[in-house]
Length: 426
Ligand SMILES: Cc1cc2nc3c(=O)[nH]c(=O)nc-3n(C[C@H](O)[C@H](O)[C@H](O)COP(=O)(O)O)c2cc1C
Image (tube, rainbow, N blue to C red; front, side, top):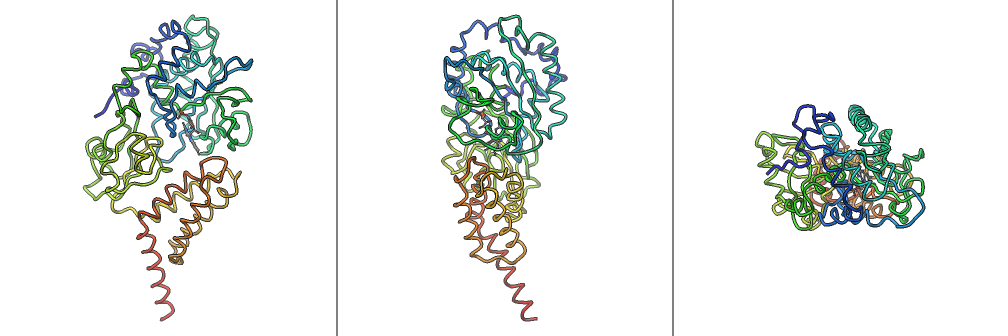
């Protein structure tokens, strides 16, 4: 089932180093790139059907084509390497094992969109990754792949690494821009969208690491070759991080469209120690949960996820076995999102705290059935009433656990009520 496009060099010794990467094809597409018109590059990427790998799945070439033409302003590219969504660990493989693939992707994107200054925004906690990335960028400058004349062509490109300070919200594209500008990382209202008014008020494209790293393959082999993988509407391959209760957790590159249960069984070695599967988080902590029954016909592509009222997200699949306490899981989830709320919007700042308090109350044994209803009501009232979707990244999964595993919340309520009755009787 596994495919090696993005991960082709991951297991080659020292492939993060320029000399080794070049022996395996790095930067070999630049002459071809510069022989093409920028619009032809955008067209090729559009035809490939490549969709953004940061979570929303927006078509990359289409996003690039939204840049206004004829403005007398610089155009910026920002590569989103924040990778803070719990259960997500794909971009770090690219940053450490094949950074030159991403740098070549940056050159391709910048040439296509007319950008001469690109930024890579990397999460604060990625200490070793930032070192590896900066080393690769320094090598690329020294070899003339970045700087005044990219690979000897009449095209200037500078790449700057900007390290975050460890805030999940700075993965949201406009909070990320604020952060690069030296401000508090809080999302902007949209519109205007960054493609029109982004970094320093200039047109800006924001793409995920994996989206950008997919470009060298597309330029080398063409859109049709890329579309051989995946489904019609979700073409290509994806780096899936599979974690939780499986026998072989890890990062696997797979074509989109495979049945999720087959992937868990055949790729990740099945549920750990032969235990029963309880649930699956399909694409990072913010995606609504799937029961084994839901997942029977769930495939790893954007359309199937939407049909199952969940999301493809970041491709971080978490497998939960029968021993998992869903109420404790929800407490953990709410704790994370409450902590990471930037505080700008009241429903998110206050509401996520209320979700956490009520879940804690239920866990303590002080909850009632009305509290479970109240949690659902809170989710409904928080969602889509904020500047960005961080709050929804909490309420969407929380609601799914409340609905699909209500009996586990009720069990805590019952246990608490009988303990209190015993105390009274005693
Ligand atoms: C709270 C929040 C966190 C996000 N974190 C990330 C992230 O860590 N990495 C990422 O690529 N996209 C993240 N996104 C999505 C970005 O806003 C944006 O859609 C993405 O970087 C666009 O790139 P793509 O089109 O290549 O997917 C996040 C969104 C939200 C709302």
